[in-house]
Image (spheres, rainbow, N blue to C red):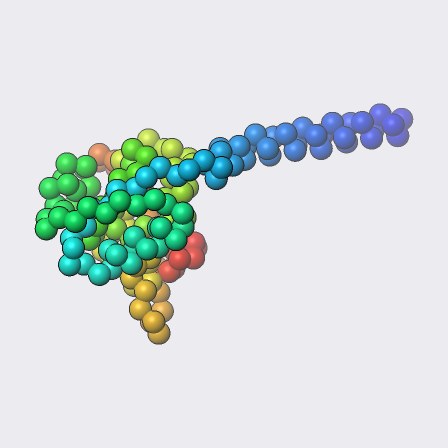
Length: 163
């Protein structure tokens, strides 16, 4: 009887381990594969854009930077709502990334692959990637997932820390 109970526990543990492994495979696959190339379009006179690019490069993204005097036409073509606009626009893996979105949120987007246009951090929150100010406490801010006519909170951060 103890033997049957032991097998039953062993079967349960094996099944749980297999379920965890199956759920983890998409994350492991992305971690093992090269991330898609990111193209960032920015105004050449904006310093924080360069800092954000450094942040995503440090997180392992390959980035091509395109400098243009007016990014607004690109934002409009890609479907970025005016209320979510920021200083730079990135394209990666079929998504738009608008503004100072943390690299961690971009990775999550690429793993989960939701039906959406992309992610945005509207404005320029203090402490968001590229908006670091030494000696200043970071703001709380939201990463918004958006598509035509729809916007929802994807994640909340204080600086680089998810909350």
